[in-house]
Length: 572
Image (cartoon, rainbow, N blue to C red):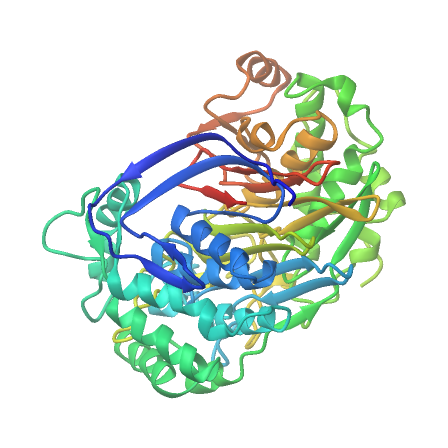
């Protein structure tokens, strides 16, 4: 019998309760929602799950051990996150899946939210002509039509286990409760006033006294909604009682979502973005995500340069990457949108000739100026969550989903217990007006009924010699793609292990505003040199929460969960 390797490299054990109540996933596999471990790194030989919450990762692992594949584990993990990570895990939001099956088939699923059928280009502009970001960022009117549940059922066609088996752990977590970490308690307390302001009925997230570490969060209304999905499939969400509850909530709060919006929602299957970077093949998400295209632009813009010899976070390597980021994000603002409504010039944007021209004005001696660097000419027409999974057979799945802002619209559907997104803010609500992440847009991302708003989510796979090499993604708004970009460069060019690739300090530039965001532990000497060249730097506590699995030559899965949150890996 072969002896499998399973090494925990670093961890923090959290004990919250003496309760022995556990959640069963069948076949003798159990997860304890009152006593669990946050594991930041693991090296395993079979399957591995990296997600934003240890309970979700443990449930995904238990599904793998039960005989499920990576798609089974992904669905169970996503559903668990909808319960234990309400700031971003969801059934009231949307997202993207990029996957590769053990038979080498590539999959890209787009279940991004859509504008309501009653939506219009100027719906967030008041009578004085002012853009009302307060309308697009919070409350009932900010919600797009949710796509997550449709995405889950689209994923299930590649799974092995019954959907009822995969959703039951999430039902149990919502019904029986789970204990809060100190960070989760602080997050709920910090958003209490918003929950009161933007809800028409009491929610599970507000109680009379402050939440504290070790408290148990029960969500019976969410459990009932999940049961309807278990019993009736996608119709248990998009039709019947749940849909009626959504519309009633909209009527109480003057929102727009209708029964027709919900019933007509469709998950789109897209052709993945594919390109080569050095000796590696990258597979990422196409529009309505901007992620795959601008990731390809950035990697291919720096490819002619000797990054390995420049070294990690030196002036040469960082400046080059900043200028690639600047140009890619300028293109994002002008050229990218929902391909069902906009002719996206993907082939040109990823062509060698175009990218060489884009870097033609790069000056290694001084900072570029965004006002002087517009989108290229083409003649063809922070709260999100990511999961990375690979199983023993080599199925690779990367999923990024979101509510947009932390807790989305802050509006919980009364009687249904789930938060709605505030994704309408990701449209260009008025040309030149930035969204909450500072992103600028124009006609390509203007609001139209049924249209998907542009996203930055970048679930990504990397292959080496046509074999699995990396599964990676992160939350973080517009910083998502630059974090994935840097994680890939950290491994390919700087030869880092998964842990360092994820946890080394990150930086970000997005064309406008013309500033470079750096994490607090960014190299001080490099920062001073950049400022000397004319760059304006802004320090942040953290950028993103990356989940990454790297496959070593001997087949070992080296997984890392980001130190920036309660993220955790589970594997065997």
